[in-house]
Image 1 (spheres, one colour):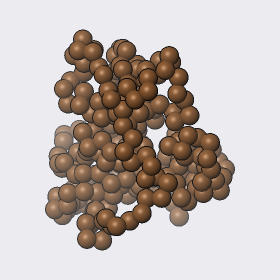
Image 2 (tube, one colour; image 1 turned 180 degrees about the horizontal axis):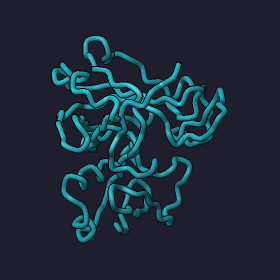
Image 3 (cartoon, one colour; image 1 turned 60 degrees about the vertical axis):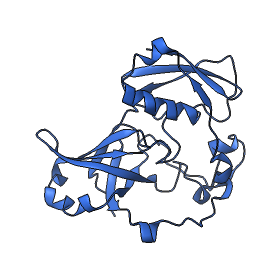
Image 4 (cartoon, one colour; image 1 turned 30 degrees about the vertical axis):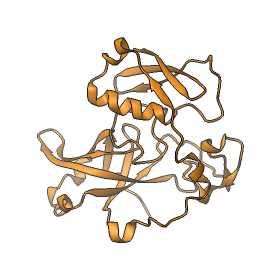
Length: 223
């Protein structure tokens, strides 16, 4: 079976560093889905405005490995404990496909890109290929009683974030709110915990620099 790229994500993440580890962790994040020219027929979106959330099936485009492993090391377990690949959402899979649920904010017809979808809560890098879009249906897709396995221990993990006022002025208020939420989730590699180290990642058109001591993250520079 050949998969066709139907759309690509336009997001604030030019690289995979800093991207939320799951969708809907940062509802403040705004992204846009732009369809490939072949799939810009507005008829394909008829009825979509009746749904509040969507499923995105997409590709781990930065995964360049041709092989796969039956076990992987989830970052939130410290990078040392191995789990079965099918018990994780790691990108190194037999088929490098991702699945995300996002909120549909608006459907907009644009002169340059045709009809686009504005979404929030996505965990996709800018340019990520999207292979399919399906409506989220709450009475079948939601399972409040579901068990979360080893992922439960990372559920409440959050840092206190400090951004000096002179640095916060470098980013628009909307993006600043999203950035705070991203930093609170701790974007460092889980196996690194050096309080003197300066970490960084690109966000939109800026480079964010920060350090972490115990449970506090301090932004040191925004370039």
